[in-house]
Length: 138
Figure: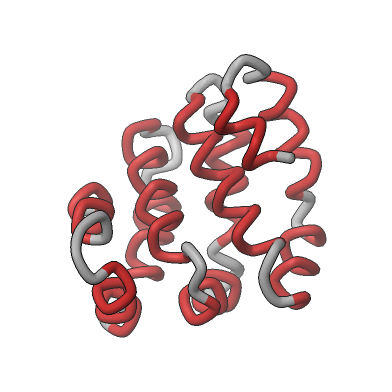
């Protein structure tokens, strides 16, 4: 499911597709997948990849992620903490957090309150040779 959403968001009218997925509850569904399968690194990576495309430069979907019951950001941080060696997951997680922290002040405050800085710093220390992760983390 998460890879299918990710693929749908990678072609054509990304903004229109993103809005349709969001309107149909896609953000919550991806968050739920992350919550239901915390040990499965493939689900976690695919979920974070899909969330990144969903929140990319979209205040609407960023707000949905932050407002998700108990916060949709928590499963992203949990995935990053649990799967520290998966560089793609870490890259997606840092990029999601970058999008949220760089948007509305409420989103930034929310991300900071959840302790995201510590998680990002750990990703930066663990994956020093990955330029994309270093860019998103910094």
